[in-house]
Structures are given as structure tokens and as C-alpha cells.
Length: 436
Ligand code: GUN
Ligand code: FE
Image 1 (cartoon, rainbow, N blue to C red):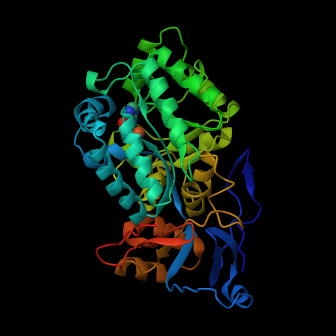
Image 2: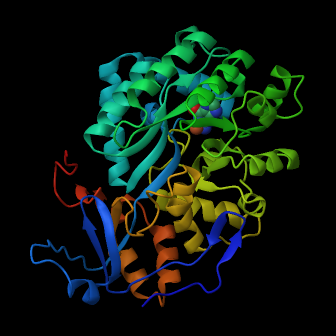
Image 3: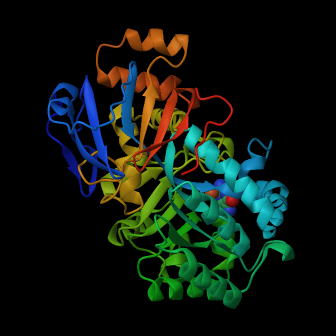
């Protein structure tokens, strides 16, 4: 049975209340890394070639892999650093830990642990910050490639207002980023993102160098932070006195567009919202981070009414969970505080197809249309006694998904599949992440 939410409410390009398909006894047919078909299991099974391998999953829900649209892999070891807001937290915890990533082997060890954690949590694609060191990106892409993951990452560009040991210059950031683009962008499933940290740590010259990279390589991404914290915004006004708002510092350098992703955007003005929409720029909504750093409440309904694409981000290490299920839970509460009750369909949309659109990957990821890459999850509807009992009492898919997004976490991820191969199995003992 295909259920529909009834009449898809399209808001510009943001099909957040759009239709979905649900098969109560469903099947997903995969070949050569891609989706061939989905449908009722009985129908799919009736027409399969003899040598088809069949896997059965009871008490489970197959969903597209989760997409994390903003995360910092070098911040793995500072999750849960107590007591500061953004700017103090950066000085006190982030910069000291990022200083270690000039060492390729250190970076590689952290990247491996980080990617294992993503798979454990059902995140199959992410847009990832490195550090200022090109080695940090080499290490990350080396590990992502060995797991055959679709990942987007880049070297931080940062030429002021940070410790000496973490700064580059407008020229060195340009040439190092360019070399990384040539080496990694479009290699297999990997993509490069030009990554100025945020306006306070880049001179206008460096932001212009970032713009030059985007013009010379029109299909690379732009990834940065914007309007997360009120002190940050006041600081940008001081640093760019000739500009009328924060977004202008990026716009001036040619950094807006449909492959540009801005993390946070908690406190945008009306003019900034309009410019985001006009340029088809995208937002990573990072609920656990916004709460942890006390940054503010992201106005999701404003983004929707403007037709700006939004995906979910964990923003590790300001975020407090790798799990997009836990991130959905906090997203719901943030919207509740603003008088909107996020539906579970919208939450799952944000973590899958919404993320794919935010990253301009809708042709490859986000749902099970034939031809899409077969990155998917086996979610366990009986992961804990409480979840099992609670879901047994749910009367429809809406309720089941909402309970999953409220109570769910990494324990609900039974398996994570990448390009049609099982790469993580929760119950497989010690060595649960498999190499390709
Ligand atoms: N703004 C600039 N750098 C950072 C960072 O590392 N994390 C977050 N959350 N915000 C930032
Ligand atoms: Fe961040």
C-alpha cells in the first residue's frame, strides 16, 4: 500500500510536506550499488532472478541513509566541553584541539573514529569541516574513500583573529585549497567544499580568494557559519563597518549560491532571508548545538516560507549527539518553543531528502527512487524494551516515526548499508565496521 499525506503542499522548492511512500511489508531491490525498485515484498519477490540474495528484517524500517549537513570531524574529542557560548568556547576548547591536525597520523586516527561513529548512527553522507591544515583533509578523504562514503569536506580558511599556529593567509589558503580541489574533488564519491570558518576569522581578501576558487571551480561547495550567536553578529558589524549586515560579508565575495551551505542562520534579518532565497543558498539547522551553546531558536517556518532549503546538522563538537534521530528530537522542541509542532514526516524529510537537496545531491541520494545510490539504514523498531512497547502501541506510521524521533538514538541503527553493501552491523561484535 502506498500512503500519501494527501495533497503535497509545495513551498517554493521546499517540498517539506510532500508525499511519501510506505510499504508495511516492503522490499528494496538493489543492484550494483544502486536502487532498482521498491514496493510490496510479495510483488518484488515474484520477479527476481534466481541468484538474487535475499535479506529479511523483522521489526524494522528501511529508510534512506541520514545526511548531516554540518559537522566538524576534528572536534570529536571536545564534545561536552562545559560552560561557554560560541566565541569563548572557540578560544578555550576548539582552537587547542584543532592545533593537532597538522599531524597526518593524528588526523587519520580521529577521522577513522569519526567515520565509525557516523556509520553507527546511520549517517551515510556529511558536509564536514577539517582544520586549517591540508593534512586534515587528506586524512579525512583517505579514510572516507576506503569506506566508499559520499562525503564533502574542506580545509578551513582562517587568516585573522585566531592563534598563530592556526592561521593561514589569503594566498596560502587559496593555493592549498586549490591543490586539495585538484586532488580530491570528484574523486569517486568525494566532493570538495571551500571552507572559510566564518567572517570574523577571514579578512575580506581571504573571502575574495574563496570567491575566486568558486568561480574557477563552479561545481565545488561553499561551507561556512553565519549568524549563530549575538556577540558574533556584533563582532562582524565591527569588523565590516562598511557593510549593512552579516550576509553581505559573504555576498560581497561571491560566496552565495545553490552549492553554498551556511550553518545556523539563527538570527537573520528580513533582507538576509530574501537574499538567501534569491541566491538559492542553503541552511544547516543544528538543534543540539544551538541549545548547547545557548545560541537561539532557529526559525524553520521562516526558512520554509522563503523557500530556502534546510537540512539537519549535528555540528559536533558544539552539538551533543551524532544521532540524527536525537537531533530530530531537539529540532521538534525548538519548533515547539516557537509555536510550531514539527511533524515526524518533516523531521525525517529534513534528515534525508531535505539534506540531499541542501547539498545539491537530490539526483543521487535522499530517497529510494530507482537509480539512486543505495545508501540506506535498517532501523530497529524494537531496539530497547521501551521503544518496542511504545511502538507496539502506535496506530500508524505518523505515530511510529514520531516515537522513533523522540526516543531513538544510535541503538535504533541495526545496519548501515553503503552502495548496496552492509558496512555496519550493530550486533556483529567487536569489528562492526567493515572495510570495502
Ligand atoms: N563558528 C565558527 N567556528 C565555529 C565552530 O567551530 N563551531 C560552531 N558551532 N560555530 C563556529
Ligand atoms: Fe559548526
